[in-house]
Amino acid sequence: MKLRSLFALALAALLVPAAASAAPAKTAASAKAAKTAAAPTTSTSTPFDQLTVGGFVGYETDDVSGISLRLDGEIPFQALTPQINMSWVGSIGYSHLTDDRGFGFDFTSNVLKIVPAARFTVPVNPQVSIFGDAGLGIAYVSAKLSPPAGFEAYGLSDSSLNIMMRIGAGAWFQVNPQLKIGAMLEFDPIFGDYGISGVSSQSTFLIQGGAMFKI
Image (cartoon, rainbow, N blue to C red; front, top):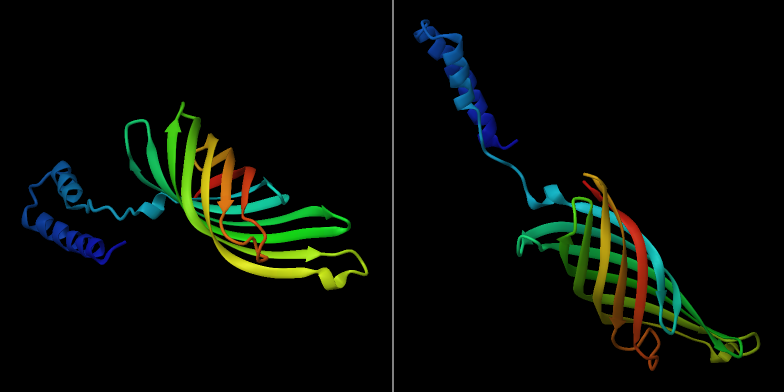
């Protein structure tokens, strides 16, 4: 509680008994009304009061494919129209992706993604809503080309920090006021060398499912 609110409560506690002793003819109803009028009405709510956090697991695929994990935080921003609500989403994701390049060569990448995005949500009914995401972030790619036994001299490993985009869509089901579950389909193009110099950019598709919890 703010210092101003504490001060108002203390002042009310001092003034109400004094007023009662000065005017003993006041009825109990009048005293109750005076206390109600003296009660503080200020609000201490912040946007973080509506914060929801969640986790997701999915599958990511392009030239390399594998498991993808993600942690999201979402804060409502404003209603653009009576039907469309906008919120800010920050996500941290990790993907472990592999590809068999033939002749015993294996390509492996570990990708860390940090993406802020805008989310546009349209309620369908009190329990179901659909949404779309658009964001721009960074992807740190650590890649390794592993040769077969006896050809270790042809192995490569490197890393790069790349710009990436996120375009996605999905749906939520509101289980209760604190919990919603959902699924999303995303397109995550990553620009620049994909870890190893000369390896082309990736434009991976992801399908993920998970849950969000209101804090």
